[in-house]
Amino acid sequence: MATEVDIKQLLEAGAHFGHKTERWHPKMATYIHSKRGGTHIIDLTKTVACLEIALRFIEKTSGEGKQILLVGTKRQAQDIVRKTAEATGMPYVTERWLGGMLTNWTTIGGRVKYLQDLENRMASGELANKYNKLEVQRFQEEINQMNVLYGGVKELNKKPGAVFVVDILHDVNAVREATKLGVPIVAMVDTNVDPTLITYPIPANDDAIKTIQLIMDYVQRAIETGKASAKKTVDKTEEDTKKVAAKTKATESKETKEE
Image (cartoon, rainbow, N blue to C red; front, side, top):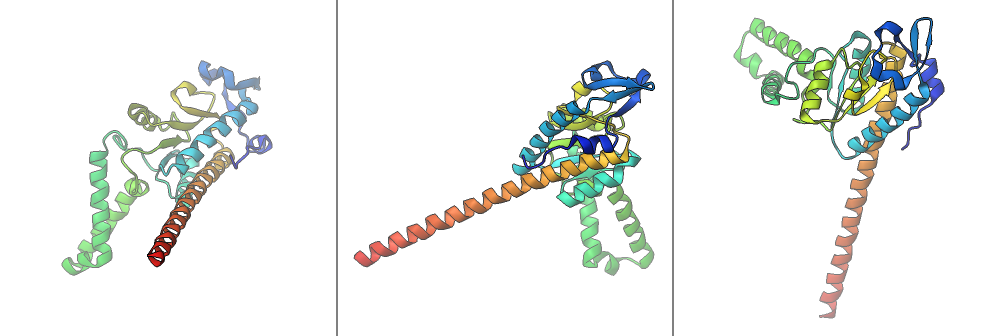
């Protein structure tokens, strides 16, 4: 794996700060180091180990050409998740998780198709030629509104290779739908959640912007590393194919001359 996790960075980002002790989930006990001033402190050595396992999975999934749906609808996570998704070309949800976004893709996909059709008609000038300015403006407003809800999943395949969630309480429906479909979930888990719901839990403070940014930086690197390794494999395959073709052509040419 190209990315090594730096425990000092996690400490500086405040990844070790959990919730108040009265708000804890007993199944997080294994990831809790101690209590300080009525607050649980997360064991960052466990965070490093879990994060590295999660990153290896993300890298592998990305390397196989599969999509990773990034989900973060809480205020602190929205911009960070969207920027990470756009930088890596991955689908994302940062405004609102719509019911059935994974489990009822027929309906969601229909809305996405309608949005794409509207955008194409707007871009081609078809709407401007057919309707007056006020009506065209209304179409544009509809496009803008739909992009808020569906913009991040316009390129989503029916079933992603994995789902990454920043806060599993805030986006519990994303976790439920991914679980129902058997899609692996990578997620940050704070001291107030059940980590056993997650395939690859990352014990960390899911409220601090610095922590979310740091974890997403690692995720971005893992996705990019996976994509790069996949490209190398494709390039090597193409190169080998060309070599075989050239060799075959040379052999055929030699045989033709001998005849």
